Length: 280
Image (cartoon, rainbow, N blue to C red; front, side, top):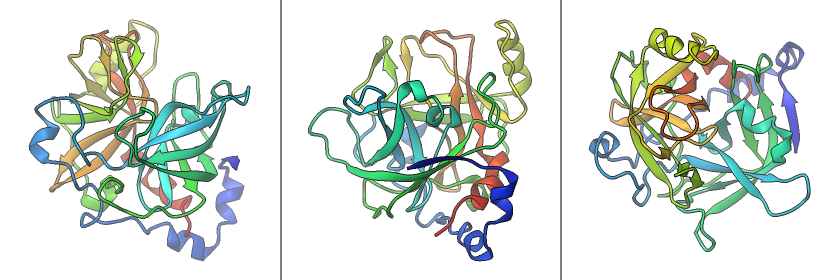
């Protein structure tokens, strides 16, 4: 597996056929399904059955060669590609990303899932770890995944039409996350709301952290839960399907810091970048 920091030279040598293949994103008839709309904005926080079937666990081989670690997640966007955060695939102290786990509701031993090896990773060429700017990466799998009830892609904003988010708009995060700062073994989801960037920036200025216009913020009312994992999805229900609006970059810690919203990379800002780095 190779980790590739995409630069302009790489983009220039991409063939016409490769670029044509980059637009092969599933439409609403395939992506973003198997999520009951009313449960996205209400109800219990534990994922039931095949909800959020695009959630992917990224598996890392630690530097000491021990058991695989799972500190980050991603979102399946077609049969070959997963979107995640750049900080998840460039933090080599966590180890080397080697595979992904799909169709998994639980991290417990004995859970049913599919494991696919990673072929390549494309990291945004302008990613900045110090402030999580351009915090986006594309994982190419070594082979195509077969869709099933528990494995399906999420829709990107460009495939269903842009949704203009306004203050307080209901959104959803999902992942395994933490409960009382202990990793959860079950997949969970949480209702959050869109927070205007100006307000988000003002809150984080109190702790000297910069929120950029390319970020998207989500407010929460949690107490001791942190549902979002690094690289996890921020989703909106739009035109009957679930749409990926953000990729988890950072948030207030420890869990329960109510004044600090979660901050995500705004996926809509990177539609062309994503398509340029996808190939059949």
